[in-house]
Image 1 (cartoon, rainbow, N blue to C red):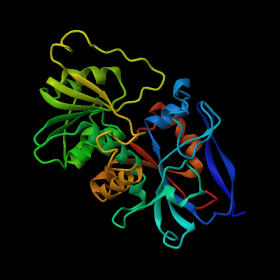
Image 2 (image 1 turned 90 degrees about the vertical axis):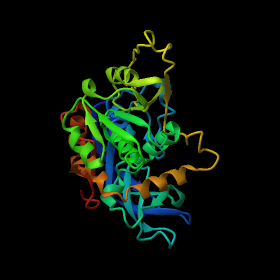
Image 3 (image 1 turned 45 degrees about the vertical axis):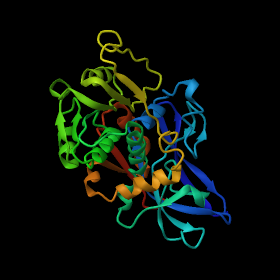
Length: 328
């Protein structure tokens, strides 16, 4: 046996605990990883923490190395950066990203980890899963040079999408959010900012990521005739009403879903999941993305921090968890 580790579990909806985890000796094609940082996804992960995954989505929402089942007890998470301590020679000592829950050490197949480029600090690399979502969304949306675009919802995913759109030539991008504090993030990412009431209309594309009914309705209002809303929000077990009467049909609007669980159909023939994640990590060389990490706690504090993140009492885009060793 390699020993033991410590892992964060959702014991029951709204209650997290840290449990001991036994580690097996890594096999020939496996790696032992010591975690440096993990990240809490404010969207999906807090819905899981609150026990709000619909039963119909239990299979679809399973994380790659999840243990247990919804609504709990369950070990859930997918933003993990660590150092390979044992495994294939070309990986030992490398900093890697893995879609693994919050745990101090773990053993996984070597193919499940992606080396972090030297230009990307380990603390920023926890954003890789979210930037990967943004990459997939933009493959789905296929924005064009010179498009007028809004991202409605300045959370972790929305800001990641805005950051990538800021690199498109000739594109006008506006981040739209009810929280005026998000203007600071927009400025750091090089995009405009507006409240929902003041947002510019006549848009070719709106990417919606606020996870609110009002945000989605406003997204439709901002479109030009024949414009498109790309929906990134996941609402868990909530029902959402939409104004699909009025001028929705006469303006020939499009509402399209996007989800990172599959590679966008427009790239599926030429890109793998590994290609997509490697691209996301390369894009994280941009230091402007540091603005998305808005809080940090020690691993031992996670059971106390998660309820505040889920309720919004602890405001954050990405909340980073740091690991000093097995005795955190």
